[in-house]
Each structure stands twice: as C-alpha cells, then as structure tokens.
Amino acid sequence: MSDAVFNLMEKEGLTTLEIFYNQRENKFLMKGMKEWDDNVPWDRYMADFTPEDILTGNYKAVGTATLFATFSELGLKDYLEQIKQLLREGKHHGIEFYYHRKRNIRVMYCKHVNTLGIRNRRHAMRSGGIRRHGLDEPELDVLIDGLNLARAMAYKNAIAKIPYGGCKTVVQCDAVKLDDFETMGFLSYIIYRIRTFTGPDMGFAAEMADIMREKFTKAITGGNKSPMGPTGGPTAYGEYLAMKEACDFIYGSKDLSKRRIAVQGLGEVGYPLVEYLLNDSAPLIVTDIDL
Image (cartoon, rainbow, N blue to C red; front, side, top):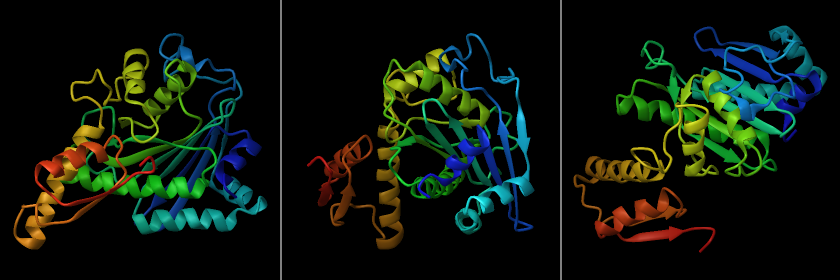
C-alpha cells in the first residue's frame, strides 16, 4: 500500500494518471494514459523532440469507470477514498501522477485553485516548488505533504498578488546527480506538461535548476545563476517579514526581541532565517538533524 497508485500504473502500463475533483458537484473524474515509451531519450528533450511530439506508437487511454474498477480489483478502493477525502478537505482541483518506469521516478503534481492563473496570459497556470522525497517514504505521506504545500502556495500567491494558482510538485526518486540529464530532461518535460512555474525545494540542488534552465526549460528559477539566487534566501526573508506582521497583529508590535522563536531545521531556508532573527535580537531555539 506504500506506493499504491504507481503500482496500479505499473500493472496497467500507464505513464499518466489524473484525478480531478469538481468541488461544486462533489464529483470525481479520472483518466489514465500511456503517453510515452520506456526508451524515450529524455536527455535529448528539446534537442530531438519537444512537448508536442508523440512519444509512443502504442497510445492508451482509460476513463473514470475503468480506473475505479481497477482500484477496486487491486484492493485499493479504501486507499482511493482516502485520496478523495484529502481533495475534498483541502478544496483541491486534483492530482496528476507521472511515472518514469526505467528510473523509477514518481511525480505527483498537487493542484490547488487556478483562479489567479487561468487568464494570466502566461504559459504557467500555477506556481509552486518542486521537492524530492525518498523512494522508501510512503506514497500517501508524500502526497499529503504535496497537497498541504499546494494549498499554502495558493494563499501565498494570492496575498502577494502573484498571477498564478497554487501547486506543489513532489517527486520520489533517487538523489539527482548534476550530470544526470535523463532525470533532469524528464522533470523538465513534466514541468511543461503540467503548466507550472517552479523552483527547487528540499532534495534538489540549486545547481540543478541552472542546468535545467540552460538545457531544457525556462519555467524554473532559483539556481545560483538566477537573478534572485537560490530560493532558500527569498523564502527565509518572506518568513521573517511574515513573523513580524504576525507579531504586530497579535501583540501590537513587530519587535521580535521579546518573542522566543523556535526554528526546526537549519537548511537552505532555516539558516538564513536564523540570521535575520539574530539581527533582531530574537531569543531562539534551533534544532537540526545534523547538530
């Protein structure tokens, strides 16, 4: 049950599975497809082929009734109900699953509202980071992480008046080396396919974004060669400002020197955040797995 959806995709020979939620009618629809063959040279993406090329001579598509029946036949009916309930509770538009069989790369694109992005005159409808999880992590836990972050991203974009809906792309795969153009080409293709604008989050190096932007897609930011630099710094500064606004709202003052603050994790976001807080003389409690 730890990788139920992708086991179903493996069994049915699918590369793509999409779950849509119609909130107004409380209705779910699904479609599954085989959109590419196992021998597609993803390292040649945008050199030998583009997102518009047909990547299989054996295209396959199945609809809602067939997929519901397949979930039931595999004993996954209750699992699917858990996913549907998560979509209801978070008021999400849906989830798209993409599977690179040979490399065992498992992508889950978690979609919240597209209100700000549907008519923004840009390629991307939603924006949100792309983060990596290990293959040993339970699929449902990774999915919950993605859905929670997608919902938060929708609110962040709305508050900042950024013309995109919210999303999060979570990927289960091995660590990506900087000469692994097969994986980076595949992820770049998926970024185009899901119409998102993204940046590297947990588990993906900033240097990877530079390579992807140079070779494969312009729809990713946050590398060392990006004008704003890696995404961790701007994210930390945003959190720092948000803390000050929250304290002003609750306590009537933006002064952080009288507020004890706990920071969990001193990585790409946590470390620069702590620097901002120390400059404001804030009492801190910090923790990190490497301390």
